[in-house]
Length: 110
Length: 113
Image (cartoon, rainbow over all chains, first blue to last red):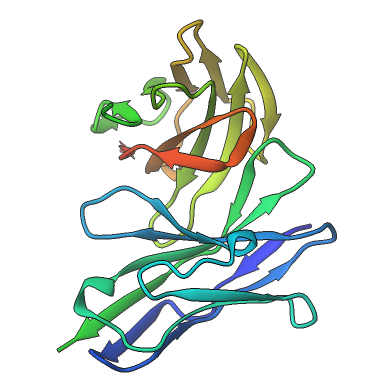
């Protein structure tokens, strides 16, 4: 069965420091991975998708099929990055069913 | 476009009761997915509706049922409520050709006492 694991419930970093959110997955098919973000009092929204290979708000994520990981990174954290981050696996034999991780709360302090 | 809207915002029910939650998709979207998010957990897929049919389902009992209307809006019904059904219920809409591009609503907070 498919699974998404985010081992850190909380990450506290200082402004300007690098931040890395870990995500590991287990899936027998061809994985499509996403990162979603939820800022305080806002709805869940897509941050980035591995296929697009974009950098959004300074964040990047590389899919490592050998290590079955999709870690999210930003070299210099900003206070506005404080939010809840969810790693999500799109089940590719479905019509858009996502398997989400439990989420990591990021707190950026000045 | 207000995006995905859900009603009500909050709901308190008693164990054993039934509840109906509603969702209006983003303009132009024809597919609606429902997720349950328990406290401290990520969203869990309940089911998805397309063309007024349940197209796929997650690991939820048949106490959870739904409906999609011709205007693509959707309802989630939960019968015989249990304390464990207390959660945030999220609706997400998408277009059939872009299933990965899901837009989420603000959610309905259900509390079962």
